[in-house]
Figure 1 (tube, rainbow, N blue to C red):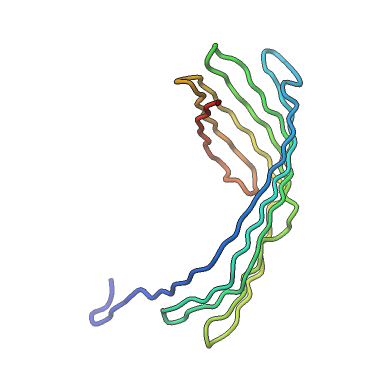
Figure 2 (cartoon, rainbow, N blue to C red):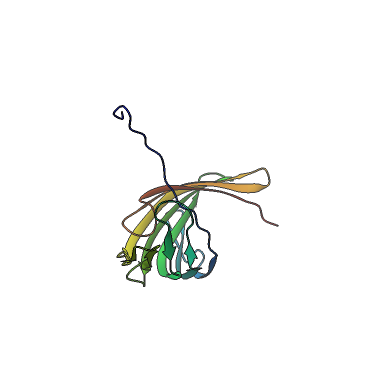
Length: 173
């Protein structure tokens, strides 16, 4: 609650810029390399590379508009793991995954610029958790001419959230 006679207001600045992003992923699977106790096991390895470039821009409005320098970020992640699948029925499969991931970059990009007419700023990039593990458990269901899936995943530190759900619908054509 504000004291009598005091007013507050929200002050903001606005800015727009261009963002260019591209990514590529290469993955090798050895489909059903092993079969143990009804589980078909597929080892895999892959690499994902992503790059984002943000253009410089200046904010307008507000008490302290900022000018941001152009910046760029890249991510190179190497993954290796094992997928497992077992049939529960003709149309339902149980799935499991164990994976290790390693990111090559050590830090995120720095943020630099200036507060218009006052001072410059430079914030160093943040340290990246470079190694993490992932485990997943889920099911696939054949239905309505496609395959629905639901997977629960847990990860240690890294780029992924610690707990997350992935759902999907796949139609082969």
